[in-house]
Image 1 (cartoon, one colour):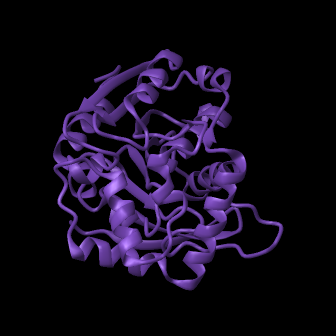
Image 2 (cartoon, rainbow, N blue to C red):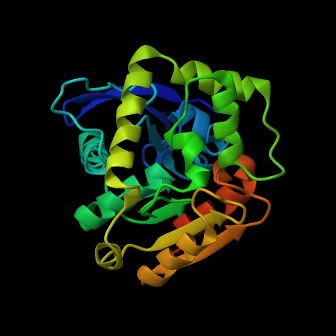
Image 3 (cartoon, rainbow, N blue to C red):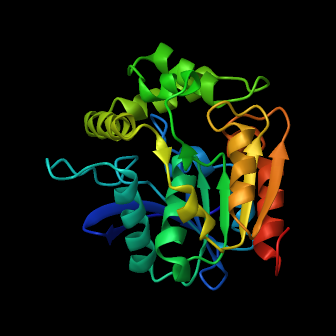
Length: 277
């Protein structure tokens, strides 16, 4: 990692932790991590931030309920997708970011897309990488994530479900995410996040709402992604008028980790271009 700063900001009344890197005078890019157990900004984006920070001002928040961000515990707070969308929009406003690009993985992609749907004037470009938003059922591939059991073996099963056949699952990675996941407040929040997903039958928007998004969008998917299969990526391309697609061989759901150089190269090219890639 290059120099980066660990910061906090009040976003929608929630004390929100984020990492920042790069020159503040450069175009802003917000990196939004996924929703698997033990996820946070550092774990998801540590391979990507050093490269993107050469050209952009990078901020990477811990989503509400994850990492070091506050985890609301009142009975009235529901860890829904709309709550994540509202939190991210408030985060962008709190930092005073001017039409940032939003780069989201999985649940983070659904959150980036949700902000673009509700506040198109706030978003410059979108990168949807293995993005949720069309997941309308709980598939077998999702069960190690949705029904994570807070054991080391369960974490290994979760990581295996999220990665391609060539990815080597190390004990260090399992231990890192496992330890993150069993923090009492984090565990309680994760259980509520997954309960909402089960109650809602997945993480899906209405296709008509997605089709109204005109923000220039890069859709990135691993060809071995079982959590968000290629058919979902193709459907995003059909629905989003101003979209480009990039598909990575031998890669699962974690392109930012499994194929960090490849993902960063295409993302930088897209974000620096006047039009698309």
